[in-house]
Image 1 (tube, rainbow, N blue to C red):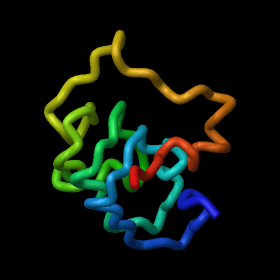
Image 2 (cartoon, rainbow, N blue to C red):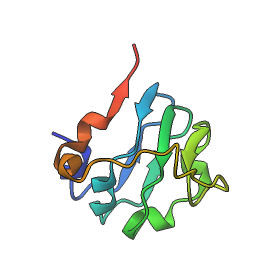
Image 3 (cartoon, rainbow, N blue to C red):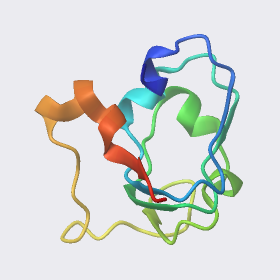
Length: 100
């Protein structure tokens, strides 16, 4: 089951897990999420905004130099950032991968 379907989750710490890809937008629907940490992975793209994601600090994203947008001070270059396809939003759990 994907993380975005765990509606009552309060804490999600995926730091130091060799993850890559973008942070799935449906995670912004986790209204109970108080702690979110994906630091020190290899994530890229725009950090989702909205709901609980507006409360997380830059510390949640340290060590991912290819992430951009608030709360980091890295602006997103429109030409280099690929947004997820609208039709893939339902299946976004496949957008974060782990390197062995």
